[in-house]
Length: 423
Image (cartoon, rainbow, N blue to C red):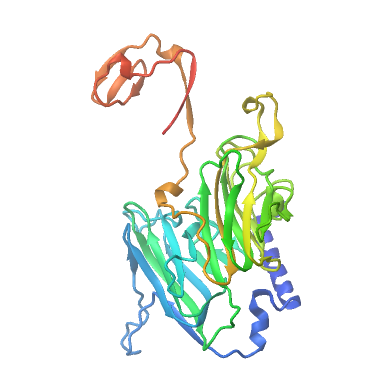
């Protein structure tokens, strides 16, 4: 099996070859034809009119306190955003001794043409295919996170009147520390009438709902579905990914696009493993069929956009294997509806405003709930001996914290083996 370094080198070699063979890739075709416009930049850098003042190498140190919104760019169009780069300090770091918000705590919002709701709204980490608040390296065509700390976006983002880019610190107490950014764009005189807007939206279910396919995105209008990021935390052992993608186009009752398994949609086979390519990858994978295992993947439809004329609905089944002790037939089978934790960001282009299909989440709501379990044998604590203490009620060798007194009616007693979820 090739190591990650060899895979990344191979991916970039393929990217270069494809770029020469297919000029449309990475915008290479645009470099041979003059298009009227003027390059601009919104930046955290500090500029002094006197170039000899000795202050131009400094930067504005951006600290966004908890609960506050910072506007990174407020642009007047028409124009096209061509590249976004940003970085910030993440824990642990000597420049953030009091701690710092992580990428899952930050909400990225982009408003086009003064619309009342954002057409881009997603946790910053998930937008850049970095799930669970972790730092991951991503090497792909539209999204690159180099060394897991420099966030680059190459999705083209046209706008006719205005563009407002915000970052919201949703952490309860920790700040965003040392936020640096460059937003490159081209100011133009006009855009074509059929120009489509870039859209992205986050959605989650902790856990997925029985009897319903998981909804990735849904909107009305005309456009292209161009990809998604996908994060799963397994709530049961065994493999979670037998569910198919089901894509409904222009209001059809049965999906005209249906897949053959979760890993197949992400262009792998017979499971997933950590990998990265220009159009698909799995930046994080910490165990096969493990209770509590995490998987984070991405798929970009850059060369194969999914076209819709009136509407589109993208869903995933949440089927997979279940071990014998979770199956009423007491045997391990491969086609069972599972209740795992799903989170996604959908990416698409469309004419006109997007249709909101998911509520805004808080940072607390996005953090995965605990599924840890402890096993307590009742025989070790029976009969109970209850004594009052300053830290709660004490029975045998275990302590239960309780408000009020330690009457026997307020203490849970169980005979035999019992399982208690840690809340």
